[in-house]
Image 1 (cartoon, rainbow, N blue to C red):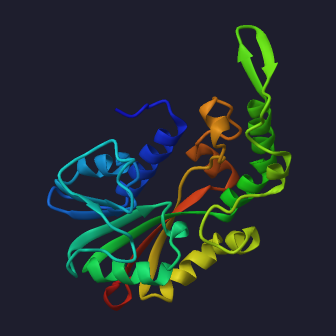
Image 2 (cartoon, rainbow, N blue to C red; image 1 turned 30 degrees about the vertical axis):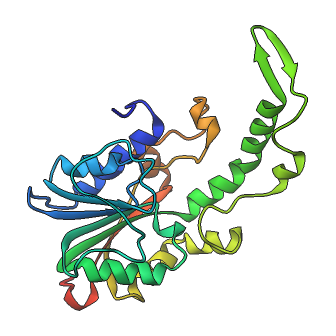
Image 3 (cartoon, rainbow, N blue to C red; image 1 turned 60 degrees about the vertical axis):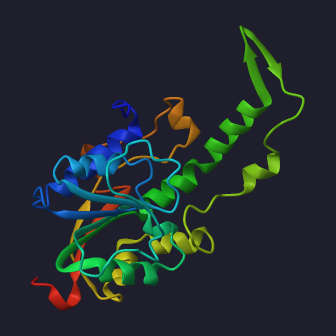
Length: 252
């Protein structure tokens, strides 16, 4: 069972609850999750529907299993066309090189009156990632240099992380540099991507505000806890859920 006190679990749980609040899921609703990861989000969907298909390019990380589990990429979905009422992905689209091909496949397997829901990171999340990058790298470097035995601190002879690694700000998704990634994470950029690939974005729902902390989060060092209240107070959020219909069938 997932750790209900883990910030990542809280993010996923509240994310699904916010998504489900916008949908009418019945027991026979056919749902496809693309990029299921550990499978925890699909278990939340399976509480509402008995037909949930989960897919991922790598199934070794799946810890929560059910009947329908498929290994595949978003660019090549091994399903018949017009098959699913809901196609859902969370923090997946930014990691796909050919986003247009992936959206084309999502369009193909989605029913004509179906809903595509993609949770994607925001410009705010990217700025937090860049701001917190150096504190995280310094933290990792210090941990790599020092090991604690009892109450005695000893320095490692061979550091696992070099100082020059601290100067390399990481790119989260499949983009050519942090500047292009920051632009791609703007709300307008996501909407443009969808609406130039035959989808109509009829709703954008702000989700939680949280900080990407990596290993520091595992040590319970929290800068911004996952919080919907913070989003309401500041107007900022770390991810958004895009709700879209097929353009040729939208009734909005």
